[in-house]
Length: 265
Image (cartoon, rainbow, N blue to C red; front, side):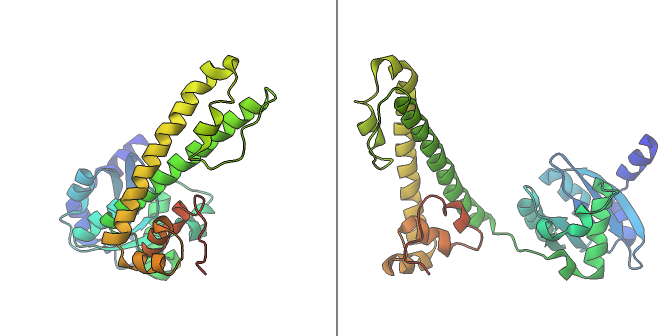
């Protein structure tokens, strides 16, 4: 078994290029498996490659243009961009739609790669292909999502402080997140200051970081996404909501929990 695996992993670039027309790649966090099919649908190449830009470029960079099928996941955005730059036609399969792979009783990485290749060869539409954002757009999405993480962390800390104070028979008045520390400090009893003092300081730090993200997002709305300015003028929410709507589909979910869409239909 080990000998067979080693043999598959040792397939060279020349072997892939000699007859493979369609290549399926099952992307793993550290190692990815690939299977190449010829025009008749026969397996003519298979192996493994480290999931790094250097290794993928070395393995697939000089084999000629191929039809490549990968599945959506953590690594699929940069891998799809790299393979496209290398001259391949890349199909990014929607993992949520690939029931053929997930219902395969003999599921393994090599089998998944072969299924991707066979579905791409048969009819790419079966893969429910999606288009990844550009690298620039992905960077902007990271800003929105990072802000969202901080907002949710702040909310959990505020809930913790409220609950802890309430367990002592006291209560922090209803207020905005920004005003919470100012309202809570006078109410914290002496016996809880050691426990809650650092938490309140962390909440204050999160306020500052979130405000910094807000300024960056407002800058994106003005400079990178002109449509966001129009949405703001139409009272469809603030700069944050406008930026989330203006960037490509799938971004709005990053901020949907942090601010309502207001008048946006």
